[in-house]
Image (cartoon, rainbow, N blue to C red; front, side, top):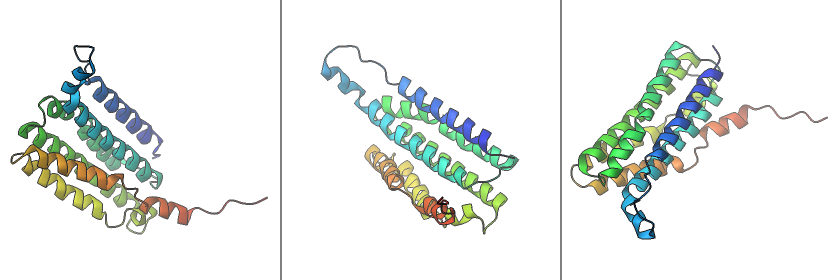
Amino acid sequence: MGKARLEAFSDGVIAIIITIMVLELKVPHGSELSDLSSLAPVFASYVLSFVYIGIYWSNHHHLLHVTHKVDGGILWANLHLLFWLSLVPFTTAWMGENHFTKWPSAVYGVNLIMAAIGYTILVRSILHVHGSDSLVARAIGDDRKGSISLALYAVGIGGAFVHQGIAFAMYIAVALIWLVPDRRISRVIEHHTPPAKVD
């Protein structure tokens, strides 16, 4: 089974998720610059979630680049990931509109950790189909960043009940970890791409 439909469907869902999030940015009642200050928490949560969705889109693209075939398990694993990502606009809006109070911040963290688990399941499903000695297996490696991310999410969820700043700091920390370019997949691709023929 080819991967083209899976990739196209995923790109479409992610584009819709971003569109829904930006629609949650309501126009303030007033024409002064100071009227925008009330939107600061909503905008901050939007920016954080936009970065997260961008990270997932980028990593998903690179993952599928080294994926050569898909089966039913991969399709369902991908839908599982998209389910949790589709909830991001809701948890983002709830957290932003309630100024990062404990329960909205904790639920946002649960959403993030479940999306991360969903991505891990997708990776494991792809590895199951391709094998431990495949190109995708060499590209993924030991996934240390993924394990660190899950630990930071857990700290953030628990920290939300102590102080909302702890939760927000942990969620930002994970985003920063993944914003640093991950060269694992691109190095493997470059190493296994044959040189272009010179006429």
